[in-house]
Length: 482
Image 1: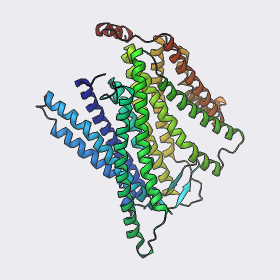
Image 2 (image 1 turned 120 degrees about the vertical axis):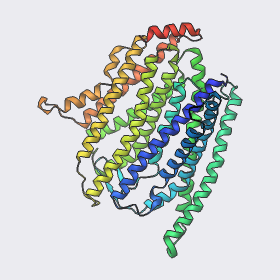
Image 3 (image 1 turned 90 degrees about the vertical axis):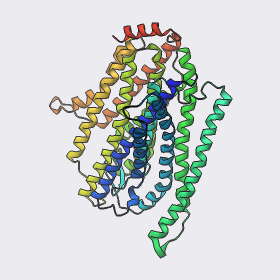
Image 4 (image 1 turned 60 degrees about the horizontal axis):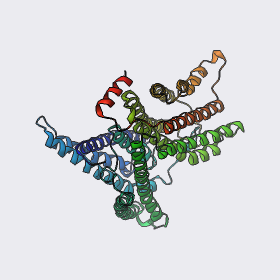
């Protein structure tokens, strides 16, 4: 793999699109956070929601400059080249600003959050009077943007580490670890700045009662380490997956790393579903203490399984590129994009709904009722689920057309929605129960694993066509996508 003009242009566009998505998600999340704080009369301290506007401002400045300095009607190939160069560098500037702002202000926000009044609601989520925990920003913005960037690269058939992917293994990993070390140095500087800012903040707000405790430096160091680890680990895993996937793609096969993402992601999902199913059977799933414990323990694993599942599907679509089926890959990437964006939006709306409940029923031990707002949110979620199910059915049909799977697997995405639809008809005697829903989730997860494992085994026996001439590939694509 060599570094050419096509790769350079694709990288610039991918970085630009990812910055745009980050700005949009930051604007939505920041607006929801701000509204929640003012709704609960808890916005006296601007440091409570300073991360989003600072990161949003940085992203807007980068985009405005890039579009004005290299845009216009007289734009030629040279200016387009310069624009791609700009965004290739500006993306890393934006990433470093995001990481720096988070490292500095996340501990301050956590300090501000301590002692705030908290409430538990029926689904087990614990919130602090409208104040969103800083790590939610990573779930809503950082992880979706990381996956979206990967999707953009794979959609354009570009490798992530294209500059040195063709190097031998020793040189390749030397370059990867070099990039991680550079980021480590930045995180150390961010952590030191955060410690100074936190001490200054506590000294100003506490006045004569200020007392330095060991919890402060530990919290600052923890924020810095988590920021470094999350981004570095993502880059490390991605670098390993890129090298293995590139070799498998040249052989016309599905890589072992891609299937590892599949088995790990669905395996975690299956384990969580089994835990909830067992808790429902013994009748303690909705006890307040059980809800709090299971949510705090299982929710990070649920987010991890979603991330691994998304990475698996993106790599699967990229490694099926030799089929030259544009309808298959186009539908698959649309399915992924919708899932990434809608997940962030629904998370933000859920937080806003929680704030609305608390503002209406502020007593700590008061049981919060279901508002019509939650019904509207559920309806939106079902609409998104229906759309993604349709897209996934189309993907399975295209796989069936290439003799990679059975057409009966088209029922798998529809099963959960069919159960919800039937349960909404009480006159037919059906009642929605969490136990049946969990059991159905277990079955569908197992079926997904069987389907994707079957595709992997078929392609191992009969590798996809690689190394064909462009004319032959184009003719094949025309036949397959009609």
